[in-house]
Length: 465
Ligand SMILES: [Zn+2]
Picture (tube, rainbow, N blue to C red):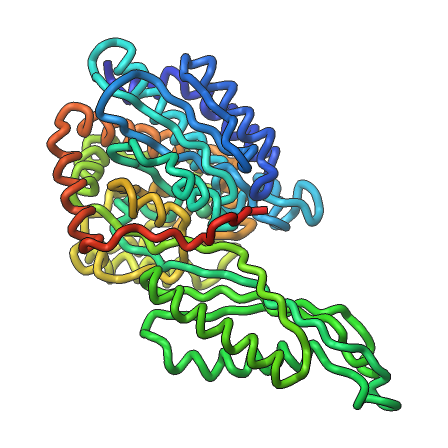
């Protein structure tokens, strides 16, 4: 059976699922309708579906087949707050202030469904032997869903994991991503009249300011690639009242999880010192964290082979008009993105608005580290993991934007989604056909870990919400 044909035959069904999840636009741990939509479809396709994951009501695990190998895909379906957007090249929300799929996770979740269904068909027909699984992983944007699932041991018996993310390029995602630890520091002071008896007040805002100041000094003395970002949350009181409550919310990112952890621990000491200095009280609320992503070159080579065996996406005139109009919404961004492609791959795309090629593997690129984070990082520490990117929007577009939300509901995004499903299923097929690839991938993971056991960023008893 041909994977391309299987996906083409069910194309309408997959597009309907992606459109529905796009319209639900549910944020992390609230994805009840989205998760159910995927589970219903998986059950109809003959998968065993378990959505009874303790503490994670919007997670699920779907499985088809039996025995080894166990090859898994992951699905994400959470939206981003405030990014509601109509499918049009002019900024206008469907509902003012509502969430929207500004990271394209409606496409992400559905392409993985498509890949799992295609592999299932091959197992059903007897062409492949083993088990295919689809993990429904909630709240990717909060960077905790998969980390909790890994901590529960839900990935322990998987042999290889394959995934993807909508992007501007068609490529294997061969770069590590950063680990992150995040916490809120809640200060409690004592209110007083700021002019009449300030000596009776203890300012929680002073504590936040001192914490931020110490963090800004800390920046110089952390390993390269470590970043700290924060926002502060205070009640909007008048300046003539000493603030009783104030909170600073921090992300500490680093190229490796243990670095992020050690810098985070130093930041906690800064937070406690700020409380000491201001005679206030601080409560540290650990909000979660995830590990850096460990790419697996062995799997990447086969995913790349799978990608190259596919036909590139072609676009209609109407779709090109949409891409052209969307490009205009971000002046200057197209040229910068085209220059990046030239720099990374030596390919001139100065007359192109959207990626129409499959990028080669790059030994240079894989040595860099992405400054952002993904919660698949923790999965990659326990199972060999690889992923691809497929162009679902034009070169000019940046992630987490209203433009991505528009593309994620448009046929350009849908075409990218179907292609991603096809590539992932073809990549998985190669692993089923030759289990020695999985053995090699596991050896590589062992080498990457260097004998150190996986340590979860999450403390015992952690609850994600
Ligand atoms: Zn995303």
